[in-house]
Image 1 (cartoon, helix red, strand yellow):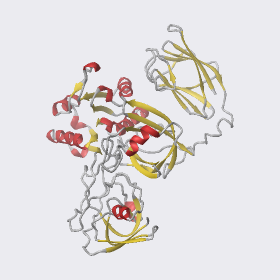
Image 2 (cartoon, helix red, strand yellow):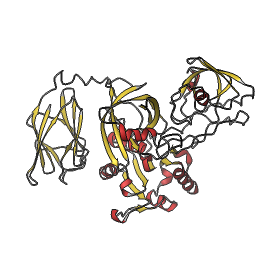
Image 3 (tube, one colour):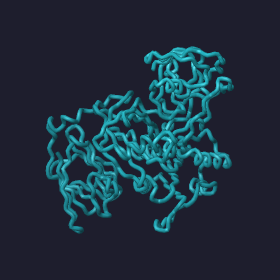
Image 4 (cartoon, helix red, strand yellow):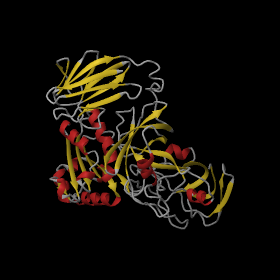
Length: 503
C-alpha cells in the first residue's frame, strides 16, 4: 500500500490517499476530475503525473511541462523515479508526502493474477469493466481489464467485437478501441447512445444496453482478436486526423499512441461536432496540443449556442476551411472517420484539391446493408473500393475495416440450379439457388450464427465451410489464411453449388 498526504497551504487544502495495487496498478495525478488523485488548483496540470506499481516498487512519472520536484530535485518531462517512504513531491504549490509504503501481501494480490508479459491477444477474452467515464451527455467510455490478467496487444485505430447477452440472446457488435496499445493493462471503448436503427430492432441495441445496464465490475467477452487495417502504423512523418462525432474514437487511439511513444509525427487533428458540448475528449486533446510541439488542434461546430460563447470554427468542413487549417495538405497522410455522407464530402474536397488519394484512408460509419445478391447478377472480379465496407457509430453499431484490402478472386455467378446446403452441426439441409447468403439461409432455418455488421467488415460471422462460395465484393474481414483454412463470412458469402457449413 502507498499512503500519500497532499497539502496546499495557500488554499488550505488537505487530503489523504491510499493506493492499493490489488485494485489498480496505475494512478493518474492532476486537476482533471477523472484522475485518481485530483488536485484542484490551477497550478497543477490536468494530467500532471502518473504513479505506477511494478516489480514491488512504486514509481512517479512526471508528464507535465510545469514545475515538478522530488525531494527538491526537478523532474524533467517524462522522467520516472521510484518512490520511498518520506519522499516529498511538489506539484505547483501542492505538496505530496509519502507517509507509508509497503509491498502488498500475497493475500492482497490473490484476486490480481500476474500478467504474462509475453502473451499475445489471439482469441476470445473475458474482461471486467473497471471504470466508466461520462465523456458527454450521450457518450461514455468503458474501461476493461482481462481475466485472467493479460496484456492487450493491438494497433492504434483497430476495433474489437464485443459479445453480450441481452434478453437471453447472445449479441455481437464491433466497436473502435479508443485507448492506446502503449497502455496495455486496460482496454477502452467509447460508445455513443444511438437512435433506432431498424423497425425490427430496439434503438441502439448494444450501445444503449451498455449505457443503461453495464456497471463497474460486470463482465463481458471480447470475441476474437482485434481487427482492422485503419491504423497510423507505420507512422508517416505528417498526419491529418479528420473526424466527425463519435468517429473520433479510433483517432484518439492513434493520438494517444503518438503522445506516449514520442513518435516524431507532425499531427493536425481536425474534428467536427454539433455543439461545443458534443466534442468528445475535448479537454484531453487540448492538453495534448499544449504539451506536444508538433500537435495542432482544430474544432468546428455546426450548431454553436449563444450560451456556449464559442469562438472557434463553425459550419461544415469546406474547401476553404481545410486549406486554412491544413496549408500543407498534399504532404500529409490523411485519416478520416465519420458518417458516410460526411466522409464523402471530405473526399469530394480532396478531389477538387488534387490530393493524392493513395495517401488517404477512411474508417466508415454508416447504416449500409447490402441488398441480397442475385445469382444472375454479374459480379466484379476486382477488389472492393475503399468505401465499399462500412461500419457504425452513427446509425448502426459497427466499426469495421474497409481499407487496404488484399486482392481476392471473386467467384463467378452460380447457375440457377438449386444446390444442397448442409448445416452440419444443426443437422439441417436446405435447397438454395444462390440468391441468399449463408447467414440468411441459416436465419430462415432458425440456426444461430453470430453476426454484427452484416456487411463483411467485422468478421463476427466467420464460419468454416466445405465447398465454394462467392462474394459481390472482396470481404474486408477475411484474410488469405482464413480462406485457405476454408472459412467464409456468412453475411456476404453466397453458395456456389453444394456446400457444407459448420453451424
